[in-house]
Length: 175
Image (cartoon, rainbow, N blue to C red):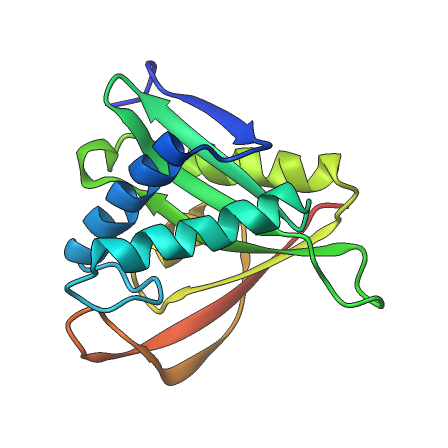
């Protein structure tokens, strides 16, 4: 089923109400088992603190923050980290691609990734990199979208329940 009622937009400034919605999204993803740097249970104050740091980076133009919204509010997000070393002005890193459990399996992840790729082009970036849990939903999505797999690192991180997981690195040449 396609998402016809969702819109994606970039946030230039992140307001408190948006931080609240983004925190809800992050907590939902962690509770749903997504390995996105946080352990379960994710305390609300930790989620809010994370999004406030992201908001600061967005206001400093070091990150691009895209959000997907539906009738229930923010249901997805993805970030582009633009703050790269001096010798990598052509590159950005994709981070925290999150889709709320209420909006999964309807094409929103693909829409967010396409929007991130366009935002990268708009910022003069021609190379994107990201990592994902090996064999997970995200990895399958990135491969379907044409991202190139570089390799796996065993036991790279922990799942929210504490189980170890491997990560796979990907890149996308936009030139």
